[in-house]
Amino acid sequence: MSERTLLERLEADPPTLSRSDIIQLLASTDAQEIESLFCAADRVRRRGVGDQVHLRAIIEFSNHCVRRCAYCGINRGRRDLVRYRMAPEEIVATARRAARAGFRTVVLQSGDDFHYSRETVADIIRAVKSAGVAVTLSLGERPFQDYRLWRQAGADRYLLKFETADAALYARLHPGQTLAQRLRCLEELASLGYQTGSGNIVGLPGQALQSLADDLLLMRSLGVEMAAIGPFVPHPSTPLSGEVPGETGLVLRVLALARLLMPRVHLPATTALGTVAGDGRARALRAGANVLMLDVTPAPYREHYEIYPGKGRDGAGVEQAWQQAGRWLAGQGRPVAQDAGDGHLAATRAGMARA
Image (cartoon, rainbow, N blue to C red):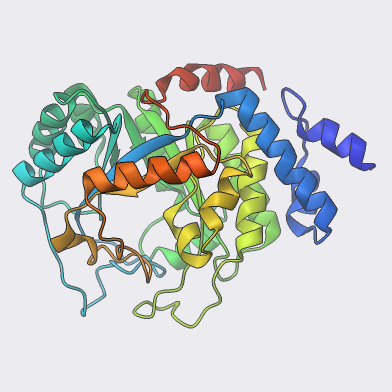
């Protein structure tokens, strides 16, 4: 396959990449081919979602979790972690402050923590929505009734990463859980009208390139409207403490391929990528990303939401986070979006139906 033919296939609408094509590009060590991949993803990003970057304010309001995920620094088996839960009124106050600063989306995130009842979460959603922002939830696997009430309360989106499309690997990393159950939750969320987000971890121990290709194809088949792709970062207090981190170049190739396969999807330049590589987020923006997730969790709690080492050390307040991101993006030649980003999503669904 010539480079010209490959580029034509990369940028076709809809893209015509096969599973074997994806694996070939993931395995590539050819610098020219990899650069061509990133440039193609950047062009497709510009056509699909434009140059604007959407800033999302994340409030990580609880680091309690009932799960034992082997890679996660807040899993229930960790005994040396300071646990916290923010009060509902504190969550709402932080969200309103984010809205005043300029954020158009607030992400409410926690471990799988059933301390907050479905009614309590619904009340929080209603109060946050009253600030005029879109509300994204990332609260893990919950009963259908919870998802339904939260949607009725005004939640717009739900982020639930499947982490890996390899069912056997998923089971090893998530004791007592199954990939099938995770996918059922995503189906339920979509049936309720949520704008769904999912994604994977790149570089997990035991993960093959074929598995990463299946991750990408699964995201596409699910019709996700946001795809969160980040590196595996080993945490010293987890069973995977001695493993090798995910490789930045491979993460960027997965990200670029996600853009090509899903031209109008929202793709974050993840915080984890910025943690493992100082220029990781800038490189992600040049390889197809169009979203930045900014942690606005209040300082007394932020350092304890330690899903991977090095997270939560930025002490920027809400307003400072918004201003710093805007200045940094200006240096990257990318403007800050002034809307919540919903305009691309209906087109994303239509594109998935045509493909």
